[in-house]
Image 1: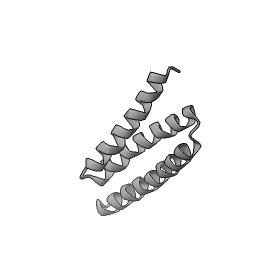
Image 2: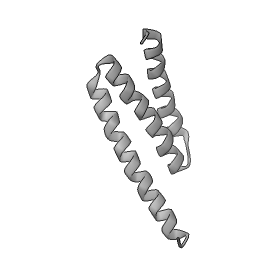
Image 3: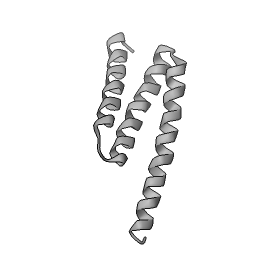
Length: 80
């Protein structure tokens, strides 16, 4: 993979995390942040920055758990 493409993965990851923090909806914040973190996991593995990959992988799991809880609480509110 070329260095410029690797850098763009990192820039894309950073952009997704920043955009996620601008969201007012917690669901969209979690979804966009998860995408950014997955890009950071990819970026971290490619460049050999394993602490970056591991920490962002953990954040992906945290986001998934919180999205599940949000979905569960919304379905219980709607009577489903």
